[in-house]
Length: 60
Image (cartoon, rainbow, N blue to C red):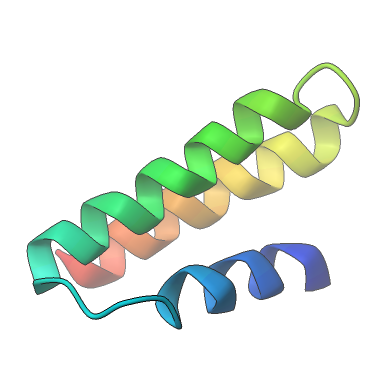
Protein backbone atom coordinates (compact mmCIF):
# COMPACT_ATOMS: atom_id res chain seq x y z
CA UNK A 1 0.00 0.00 0.00
CA UNK A 2 2.91 2.32 0.72
CA UNK A 3 4.11 1.85 -2.87
CA UNK A 4 0.72 2.81 -4.24
CA UNK A 5 0.67 6.02 -2.24
CA UNK A 6 4.17 6.92 -3.37
CA UNK A 7 3.18 6.34 -7.02
CA UNK A 8 0.13 8.53 -6.57
CA UNK A 9 2.11 11.26 -4.83
CA UNK A 10 4.73 11.22 -7.58
CA UNK A 11 2.07 11.56 -10.26
CA UNK A 12 0.33 14.40 -8.46
CA UNK A 13 3.54 16.31 -7.81
CA UNK A 14 4.40 16.51 -11.52
CA UNK A 15 3.34 19.46 -13.70
CA UNK A 16 -0.06 21.08 -13.13
CA UNK A 17 -2.30 20.24 -16.13
CA UNK A 18 -6.07 20.80 -16.14
CA UNK A 19 -8.15 18.90 -13.60
CA UNK A 20 -9.76 16.59 -16.19
CA UNK A 21 -6.42 15.76 -17.76
CA UNK A 22 -4.89 15.16 -14.34
CA UNK A 23 -7.62 12.78 -13.24
CA UNK A 24 -7.41 10.76 -16.43
CA UNK A 25 -3.62 10.79 -16.38
CA UNK A 26 -3.32 9.60 -12.78
CA UNK A 27 -5.80 6.79 -13.29
CA UNK A 28 -4.16 5.83 -16.58
CA UNK A 29 -0.69 5.74 -15.03
CA UNK A 30 -1.92 3.59 -12.15
CA UNK A 31 -3.55 1.16 -14.59
CA UNK A 32 -0.43 1.05 -16.76
CA UNK A 33 1.67 0.29 -13.70
CA UNK A 34 -0.82 -2.43 -12.70
CA UNK A 35 -0.49 -4.07 -16.12
CA UNK A 36 3.30 -3.94 -15.86
CA UNK A 37 3.20 -5.58 -12.41
CA UNK A 38 0.51 -8.16 -13.22
CA UNK A 39 2.91 -10.96 -14.14
CA UNK A 40 5.34 -10.40 -11.27
CA UNK A 41 3.08 -9.33 -8.44
CA UNK A 42 -0.64 -9.88 -9.05
CA UNK A 43 -1.59 -8.68 -5.56
CA UNK A 44 0.08 -5.31 -6.06
CA UNK A 45 -1.43 -5.07 -9.55
CA UNK A 46 -4.89 -5.49 -8.05
CA UNK A 47 -4.15 -2.85 -5.42
CA UNK A 48 -3.09 -0.42 -8.15
CA UNK A 49 -6.28 -1.12 -10.11
CA UNK A 50 -8.32 -0.54 -6.97
CA UNK A 51 -6.46 2.72 -6.32
CA UNK A 52 -7.19 3.91 -9.85
CA UNK A 53 -10.90 3.13 -9.46
CA UNK A 54 -11.02 4.80 -6.05
CA UNK A 55 -9.25 7.88 -7.40
CA UNK A 56 -11.70 8.17 -10.27
CA UNK A 57 -14.72 7.75 -7.99
CA UNK A 58 -13.48 10.58 -5.76
CA UNK A 59 -12.50 12.92 -8.60
CA UNK A 60 -15.70 12.48 -10.60
